[in-house]
Each structure stands twice: as structure tokens, then as C-alpha cells.
Length: 287
Image 1 (spheres, rainbow, N blue to C red):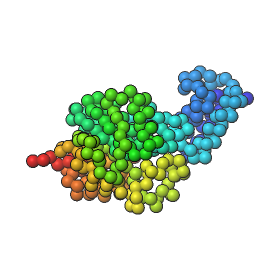
Image 2: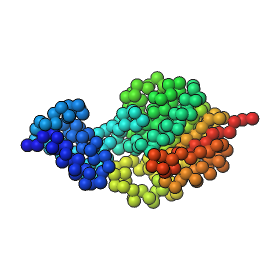
Image 3: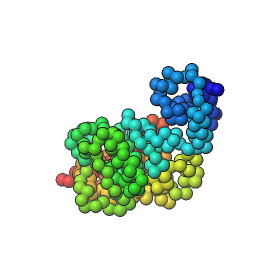
């Protein structure tokens, strides 16, 4: 027999030895998931013995994690900008790096007041939902192509209680927008930007578990930036802004693409690790 606390310590040690940076947090969450306990109940029952059935369930989850399956998919949810969102293998796991994209858009939208925002290539809807939650005067459209990802989007709209201001629409970022979509003052996009040839070299937890549809950005990684700047600029109101997340080493190229597309004041913003992560520009006003 083993106590909850000792099982937690064992899991934490194994996860840490595997090089997982969030070993302590993940050990606790996996133990809570396998035992059906809340965090508060885990702390309360830490000195108690674990039943054989619960121990077996927790160890099975730990094996899956050590085999590379992301904790977010095991848990079925993940936190982003203060929101807890549903996730599944149909969508990318929301990352701290992407919070920079949301935060930059939130600052702009708050200044604009009442406006419409499009989150293109929405995935779980994390960016658009964070904007809507932080800027109550805006209306947000989550644009996503994959039907399974769309289910996650719609579920997260309900989970966040934002059904009155957020909607989900099937949109293909590589093709021109439908005429019925209307005009927006802000477009945010975290597109697929990994060059196709680089995907086999990604970390196993990404390569083998996260959706390639949301990763592969074409031969050079710029297919979506090219298509969006060509087809989607016209849905942006004059003076509106377009925000992109970019991969490592892509910021200068995307900045040049935006300048060539008549965007002004094109700006690059680093993430918390100092890597250039967001590129945005303002569509020139009509004189």
C-alpha cells in the first residue's frame, strides 16, 4: 500500500527524471485525474492510503505521459490567459507563448471599444475567447476549418459563458472569405507555420500527438501568411489591425510581407523567452 503523498512524490520524481519542466504540477494533476479527486481533496487525503484500483489508474496515466502524450490531452483541458478551456487531439494545446498574441490584441481592442474581432485558424478558440473575456465591448468570430476542432471551439464558447458575444464559423484561411462575413476592426491568427520538412524533427509530444493540420505551414512555413495577406486584408476596416503569431526566425519575413501588403507601423513583439513571437500592423487609413 502507498499513500497519496508518496505516490505523488514518486510520480514527480519520474516526470522530473524524464526532463519534464512541470513535473510537480503534472504529477498532482495526473493523480487527481486518476483518483477522481479535486486538488483540495488530494491535499486533504495526502496521508491516506490509495486503493489498488486508483493506484493502477494513476500509474497508467503516468505511463502514457512518460511515453510522450501531452498532459493537456490526458486532462482534457488547459489554462490560457486565465481561462480553463477544453482541448482534444483535434486542436493545438494553448501555450504561454501564444498569450502574447492575445494580450497584444486585447490592448488594441480595449482602446477601440465596440468592434468586431476575427480569430482565424482558431483551433480551441483560445485567443479569440481571451480577447472576448477581457474586452466586453467586442464581438468575436472564431474561424476554423476542421470539424473536430470546431466542436472544441463551440464547447469552449459555452464553457466560458460567452455565447452572446462569440460565434464559431467554418472558414478556410487559404481561400478568400465569404462575402457574408462582414468587416472587422481586428484580425488575430496563429496559423500553421512549421515548414513541412521540419515536422519529423519536432519533439515527440508535438509530432506524434498534436494535429498536423494545425502545424504544417507548407514547404517554407509561409503558406498561410501569404494566403491571408492576399485574401483576407479586405475584410479589415481601415485603421484596423492584423496580428500574427510567428515561429522562430520568421518575424523579419512576415514583417516584410505585411509592409508589402500596405500595412503601416508593422511591429514585432517578443514572447517571455525573448523570441520574436508576434507581428502586427495597421491597415492604412483611406484618405
